[in-house]
Amino acid sequence: MAQNEDKDAGEPGTGGGPTGIPANRPVFRGVAELVLDAKGRLAVPARHRDGLVTEVAGRLVITADPGGCLLIYPLATWEPIQAQLMSLSSFNDKIRGLQRLIVGHADDVELDAAGRILVPPALRRYAGLDKHVVLVGQGQKLELWDASKWQAQTAQTIAFPGGLPPELSGFSL
Image 1 (cartoon, rainbow, N blue to C red):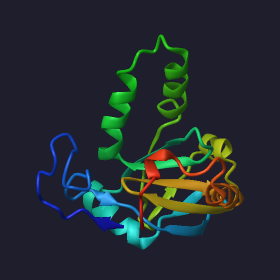
Image 2 (cartoon, rainbow, N blue to C red; image 1 turned 90 degrees about the horizontal axis):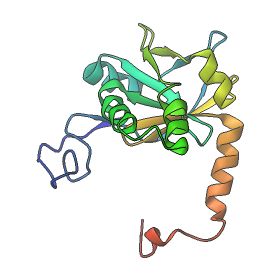
Image 3 (cartoon, rainbow, N blue to C red; image 1 turned 180 degrees about the vertical axis):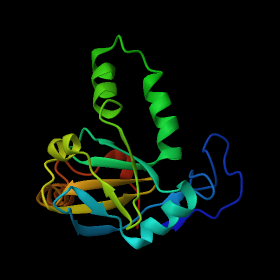
Image 4 (cartoon, helix red, strand yellow; image 1 turned 120 degrees about the horizontal axis):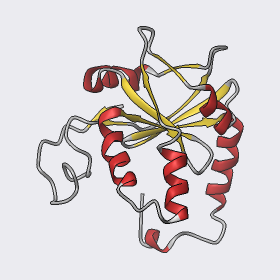
């Protein structure tokens, strides 16, 4: 995990420096293949753990993602997301369903002294997590995937069914 050390205010409305990530917030990147223990605990890799302890005292929120994985957020990053989602009208069935899925499944977790988090049983069932899992850095959050689902997702992604999205035209790495 890297730290966004850009102290500039950045562009208006971005929430931070030029990256759009507030200064001193954890930045997650990389893929780690891990194992859940028999109690459903996940040992968070040191590259992520150290910053989480320093920046957010190990306080995290883990929730369901519509894509079939779990999302793990530092508490300070999660709170405005939850507030924004809950400010939407629950009279819309699709919005209410998303609120139920994402906020309803949200669980506060803390890193223990060994740098592990307990993935709640309901969330393990939702994501089909058994033993072999993959933790994927996604900027301000982490995704937690069943290893076989991750492999299938990756294979589908690199096949680019239907071609690249128009937003990526002219994008170069």
